[in-house]
Length: 401
Image (cartoon, helix red, strand yellow):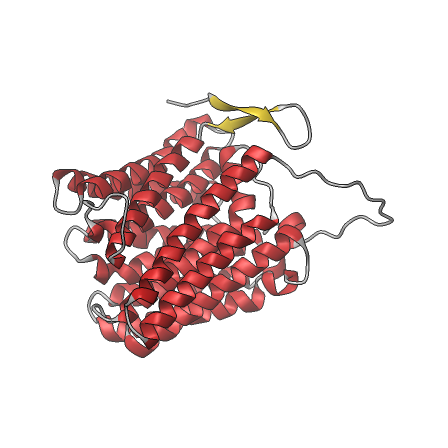
């Protein structure tokens, strides 16, 4: 069954009197958003902090955030790529539907309930549908970059299955592989002109090594986790070297904002890799918390903030104009994570550690409010300026970010 309707939002656009039409795909963002809110609630409980729903099972935090929220968001973007102008491929939206619904049920029911089990099973089906979306895209265009993206979905599928038998802590390298490879592939796709012809083969090789290390960590957790950290650092250094942000840091507006966010994400990937190598991210120690959150907050969430004005319009069907206020949640997120990591290394998981985690939650909520506010406000009014030459294209504005 195909869906062709859309939701219409009242109000003018930023530049005229036309009414904006919000794509029906915003429904999937709602599913992912609910997983995000429930996952953050569980995260606050993990911190020992006050949380709106204090009866929630806090052990679901990591899986709901990764498979429920990030899985929904990423699979929605890929489903849109497959189903665009091809209604027969609307089945692709099963992936974000199942992952989002599974995350919500797991968050509500917890790991030991019937509804939690249903949530896990829905996530397995959602991850399988996500993998099939990539395979269908490969069938349409068998490109090396798509092979790498297929690789990114496999760890997610494996993790959703193994979580029924393994503790989530044993699956962190697999879940981390899913995010790192997905985001690195996104960068290779959006900045392919600046990264050069060797970008995709390099990424494919590094992705294979990362997945091998993540898989080996299930059997030899200590040496394989350290190897995972090595590959993680190599990927971060490669992105810093060949990606666009170093060249865009002196530009203005959206390119500069995205450059700061990207470099911050790469920095946290290096920090996490160093901790993996030095400590193997041993469960039950502060280092375990560091390796998790440098990937899932420091890297993944800064990448969401960096790409929001570019990716969200393609999903929602309406513009998300860049505004300088977007720096506020970006800075807060990184300050909160720095406080959290610094507290763990110096004084342990005390009040400063809790404060850092709380700042992270506030930063994510503020980011959501900021995005929603910019959508409502529309495009900012621009002053007309006379130019003797056309503005130069940037990776974010011309080549793609």
